[in-house]
Image (cartoon, rainbow, N blue to C red; front, side, top):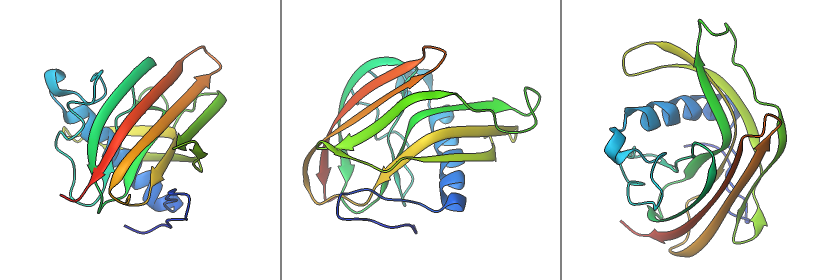
Length: 171
């Protein structure tokens, strides 16, 4: 993984890397069976489902308020959406966006840098899709306990308010 890991815990992938990670995140999120889907998960019990070896993905939500608890490996960066969407190329030939009213993510109260990434990706069925989102990440965390807050509001009224209680541990 490239990018930087500033002292505040933020991790800023390049435009190319962030676009590729957003596509990988969607493939990961969409490939989960309904009964283990990390995005539908209300508690965090499915956060570890089918995680890749080089990065740890945290799930977004389908909107609303969610509190999750999970353990993340302390040797991998963490990548996650604050607000995102995906669509097929028949809907539009370029990535569509949401109009963002506000978006924030903070680790232990310290705001994280947010980035917009747009990319195309292929599903596990090789269907071409587009993704757009406001994303952020964390450099590998020192073992310990953390609180990650994610809040966003789109102009169409869609909102997210997610709190992750993270335990970073050596795996």
